[in-house]
Image (cartoon, rainbow, N blue to C red):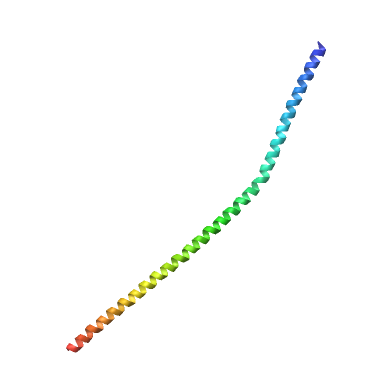
Length: 107
């Protein structure tokens, strides 16, 4: 009977050792994965930061280009308005002089 109990206990102990070893291996693997993920996280964050910085530079460049184009267009419009104003003023002055000359001749 003692031999049966002892054999049963040895068998049970071996199974428990196997389970403990399997659990220990899983814990070790999980710890390794966590270390890998922990070391990869800063690198991923740095990579993402570089991508965002590049994207921001591209957006700023496009914004600056659009701003320069808009200022150029506004300058052209203002120049046209000034030219038109000078043309109208010239016509008005010419017409006023023509009328004045007509009045001077009539007098």
